[in-house]
Image: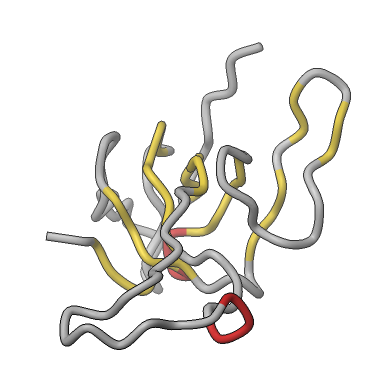
Length: 105
């Protein structure tokens, strides 16, 4: 099944970004890592509208890796299954562009 997002929606795939060790060498236990909050952009809509009704071009493009707000996601349904309430690696989600925290450079 193919999905093309509309307006300011972005279709993403959640990445496995579990940090087991920081750059300084500190090992982190599983409990401190929390929810996944990185995803790869698969497709973007045409963009949202500003206060005056003008079309705003999307700030992200397919292939970008983003940080997202894990509490503001809408899960996409694929093959008759709905993804869980928690972001797990490999799952797909629809997120509004305004809920993207940043793009990994």
